[in-house]
Length: 163
Image (tube, rainbow, N blue to C red; front, side):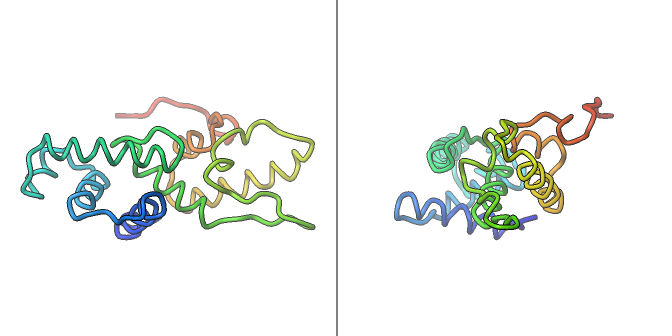
């Protein structure tokens, strides 16, 4: 799994690629705080800002990342989105005679359960992809959500969590 520093550098790289500018210290602080599951009030205190200002910065960041990744990004899903897109930008899986699939920001999580005539290759690709995501520490629920498939497709029964 990516550590905090890798997440922040990847976030900065994505923003730079989209806007031509790097994240500033406050933006880094907001992302870092959110990745550490801090509340906006705590992030504001750490950064010597008002909570309202931090919420405004967060809103702009989530809007920007939504544009970058082509999906709705918010405080609750930024961690999994950064991980998924970092992984998606770095991985391709090769088949016997040519590439089965190059994972990119679009094909990674959309429509993998809509099979073509290459379903055997797609099933192998999906199996390897799921195994790789598990090594990154994603839960079965997160993988199912990322890949837009149901848990049964992963061979997992959807059981209630013990609290």
